[in-house]
Amino acid sequence: MKALIVSRIDSPEALAFSSGIRNLLEGIGFRTEFDEDTGSRIGRAGIPLKDADADVAVVIGGDGTILRTIQGMRNPVPVLGINWGEVGFLADLEPGQAEAFIRTLARGFAVEERMMIALRTGSEELGVALNEALIVTTRPAKMLRFSIIVDGIVAEQFRADGLLISTPTGSTAYAMSAGGPIVDPRIQGFLLVPLAPYMLSSRPHLISESRDLEIRLESSKPAHLVLDGQRTVDLGTAGTIRVRRSAVPARFVDVKRNFFEKVEKKLRNL
Image 1 (cartoon, rainbow, N blue to C red):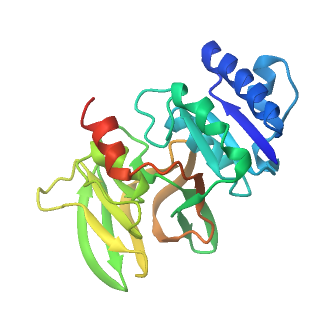
Image 2 (cartoon, rainbow, N blue to C red):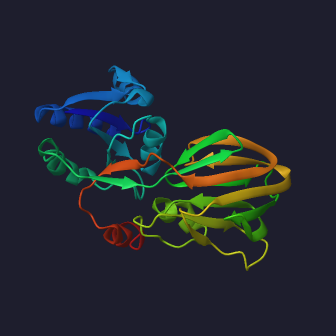
């Protein structure tokens, strides 16, 4: 089997740990390669994430590193996250747990799929996101006007600093900080969370992925779309964004850890 190793690159300790993970993986029979950013920092050859073709991607870092890895890969290689960040909600293992679990990988492993969202305007594909897509004004302290259209019906109109379109996976990230609910990742739906809405009646919505969802931007102020905090798209001043479930999910190595156990340990005990 083959493993891709990705590390956060701003931490010498994480980079050193990634070298140890490489030795461990090769010791149990894996062929290994680094992504090009990690490889350049430790003096080894690496490959672009878009060319990744492996059985598993071992990612050492926080949620940002994991999101960057998933955004960069063309093929959804199963990700095994080792937390080297703050909360690291997408990382299922702490460094002290990593060696024992990695030694089991050669015997095979289960994979958990996570829904991603795909966004487009007209015929233009804007991109995909695992956690969230953020629509926000390019001019600080200015509000945007939105219409939420569900199955062709205008369900809500409001003004706000921005709008988060989150997956259930992303409900424990920015959406939670903005007042959204924690959503079981087994639920398939779109979570809409207005950012600082002008009217208190503008509340978060959880909408089934089977519905036709459109976000209409009705503002004279230019806006940006930010995907997973990794990529920014200029939206201009008006237009309609169609939101749908991505045909390709994100994939994670299943370490048999209950989602609500993670909520308790990583969020409630901060």
